[in-house]
Length: 149
Image 1 (tube, helix red, strand yellow):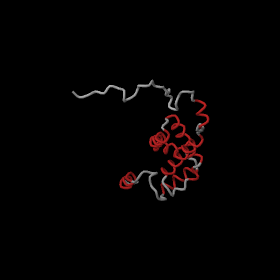
Image 2 (cartoon, helix red, strand yellow; image 1 turned 120 degrees about the horizontal axis):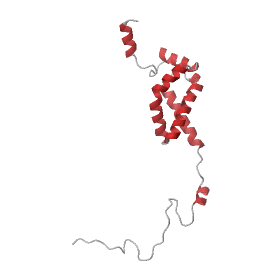
Image 3 (tube, one colour; image 1 turned 90 degrees about the vertical axis):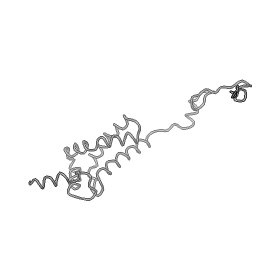
Image 4 (tube, one colour; image 1 turned 180 degrees about the vertical axis):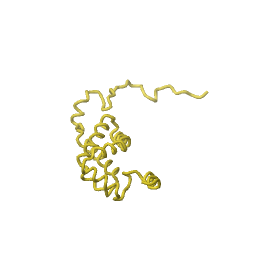
């Protein structure tokens, strides 16, 4: 390989950022279909920080973001044959992550209003603040007012 060819190869955009079906995206697609472990290692190394930050942003929970991070890469490995290289790999990867977050939020059980009512003791509000009854004569009208001299 000549020096000129090496320089051109080095200046070429990164392997996985191309949106059109090029040699690189076709190789990526073939590698995912073949479950190439070296390719998966390279992808994880390239996208790990951005993917984790994205999941952390969506969930707000570091432990859940870690679980979904791992699940995302498992899905990439299991469903790599579905990547057709017509779109960016990055878009496909982040769509998998987003769909996993949606799945988790659907599985999360929200307490019903009846369940919530039963948990609130008498005399307390939903916010956990005890209700007070004030004596007559207490209020903003009866408070001393500071007057200017």
